Amino acid sequence: MSKPENQKTYQWLLILLIIIMGLRISSYLTLFPSSIGLTRVVKVGVRFLLTGFCLVMLTNMRRRMKGFSFVYENHFSGLFYLAYALLGVASILWSTDVHFTILQLMMLIESMLFAWLFYHLIVIGEYLTEGRATFAKLLAVSISIISLAFLIGLYFDPSTFYRDTHGGAVSRLGGFIINPNELGMLSVIGAAMTYVRMREGGGLGWNIIFWIVCVAVLLLTQSRSSLGAFLLVTGMFILMSKSAWLKIGSISVAVVVLPILIQTIVIKDGDVGEVMSMTGRLPFWSDLIAYGFPDRPILGFGFMSISDSPFSNKFDSIHAYAASMTHNTFVQVLINLGLVGAFICIVQMTLTFMAIGKSKNVKLKLAAIAMLIPLLINSATEFGIFGEANFGIYFYHLVILMFIISGKKVKIKKKPKLFRIHEVTA
Image 1 (cartoon, rainbow, N blue to C red):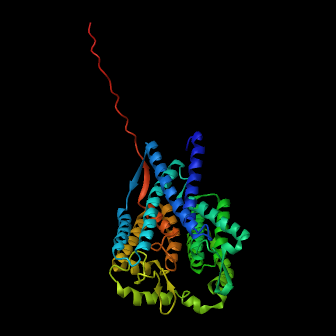
Image 2: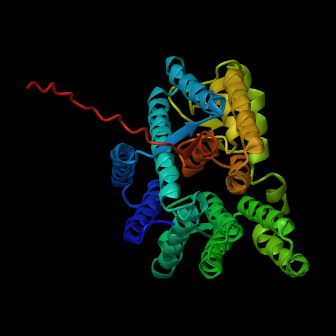
């Protein structure tokens, strides 16, 4: 156990890590919807300040911690992600939207650097607090606080925090601050981390409160993909439970609740055709692959660029809509970095899954799987883990690093004492 005089120090370290995590996630939100310029300045400023702060903090802590050392493994997973980033840098030479490519690359590289520094701090924090500052706890608390802020904001300023769709028939939480589907994914990760915390032996009362807050936000976002991810994650943890009563109760609740959720969230405004076309995504993807991909199949249009026009960053779909992103991270890679980029990303993901599979850290493995389910489902419909800058990419960076960086105690070698021999003469 830690010495009593160090308890307050370790508690403050836990709080500091939660604040850093919360601020980092918040830096992806449109905090000032009425001013795009101010929002960009604040976003960039907060991210770079956090990265600089983590660098100073890590440097200082490593200098002080003599009996601790970092361990690195599963290097190829990280190296292939680096290869993906380097291909993106090279694509500046052929990008059809050079300025946007450079902007996205800068944000990607900064996210990689921050994740690298911050995950080192997480490892140190868990070591110093003897397992109290776990990765799942940091995420559960920080996401729950952000989710609560959205609920409070909805009460005081619904016009900003709600977004009307389907001709005003459907209102979705997120408004102009964040895409409702992205907010839904964030709330699912928060709820998933409460499940992990419960299995870790965390406080049941607080985790139930965090879970309720996250689920409330999820339902208010009206996000179908996030709802599906939540049901999958919840089902996984229920199946892992040894309680027969929990399983029976869950099935009973599902029989009652699922028809209501399908009617109110899945089939919005009674439009079954919209559901079948995934809100126009399927014809859009079909046109991208049929008409966009053949133009540049090997190296694509450049990092985060999907259009061959130097005057427009949007792909004009024949059967759907015009958009600057594909709403599918895997199609996005195929179009903007071609077959070369798609191959690198597939290998990188395979190596990450292999690292998770062979890990002996059951708690870390469970947290990674619980995160990847909503991340991958969101990747199939929105920005995703290889898309435009978003916290989904940041979370994927953390998942990769979870199985690359760890820590261990080391023995401090004592320096031999030096003795001077003085010759005494009579």
